[in-house]
Image: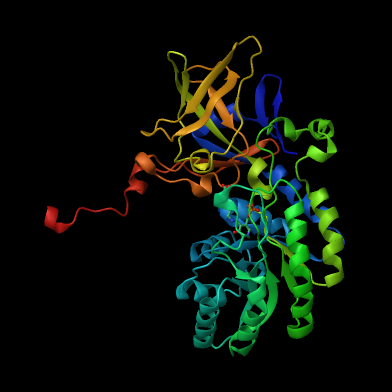
Length: 434
Ligand code: LLP
């Protein structure tokens, strides 16, 4: 469920007409719905009722400081992966103390910054990393809280670039070596064992791989509780969202119309399957969902530059490009694309929807059917709230897009479009070229 819907002919985010946002701030612009994020948070918490849950929003999905502040206000901590993300949490006025630090290559400086700010735990991916964390904690005269990431060797049945829990992935320590890793951790003077962690992949659309992974790791978590007194089990993130029918999936009626066995994963199904497996452990359960929290809470607004009609092929050229939303180019991912002004008298158009960047990969959709739209008209890329802006870049010297947050009938700019001067601020001509 989300809060993007047509009201009459015009697409709204909550009570705000999206065309008004585009008029004020231009395009391409990301627009987020605060109510959708809050609903997602609440539904996930309710779905897991009966457990002691701490939600650590995977901020790599969307790290705008306003979004972080919104989740912090709701009670979330963060799953963060860099010194930059620690600093974003601080800039948002939020708490690092309920956040966890993941990633296979944490630098000494990042480990120090996390310890100085009271990180809840490091999610450790290897034995050399354990030694490094112990060393840095020693120089600060503190004990570093840790959990080791277990790689449960489960197939998440998702895109190869975002599956993480198979034995061939770079992540975590195989279950059969995990006991030895904990024994090694227990010997370090500046390490405090706090928990155990896993994460099997992203955009999972069925609950079965989660169940398989939890069933594999839960007995080990129970052993760790008995042996080291661990207090938590993080089961990672990874809940998928609806991309194909994104707009319609905002309505309860759409969900009701899906056959139960084909219904996309919901927090209710996820909770119903996992709560009985997790409850007997008596541990705090950490969740690290990113995409589920924000994916359907954001759209990317874009303006049509041209409709180029070709022999046997039409191209709808829009002002957003692969630098603004890289997912289609990178993962062949599908984003629904809809007009901001719906007009049933218009013909349908079949076109490749592309950006202005000079390479063929800058294509959002092939042979997509969309209501005919022309130069200057506006479209929205649905389900763009996760891994949209956060993966954007400046390729072709295109500035980073603007971001806007909507709440009810109000909206505010939460990130101004980048200027050319900001883009080249760090660059200079060396003396030997002058
Ligand atoms: N925890 C860990 C340790 C992770 O590596 C990730 C995501 C998450 C949690 C959050 O996963 P989520 O709930 O968002 O699925 N850029 C890709 C997704 C990469 C995910 C990387 N790790 C995309 O656009 O599909």
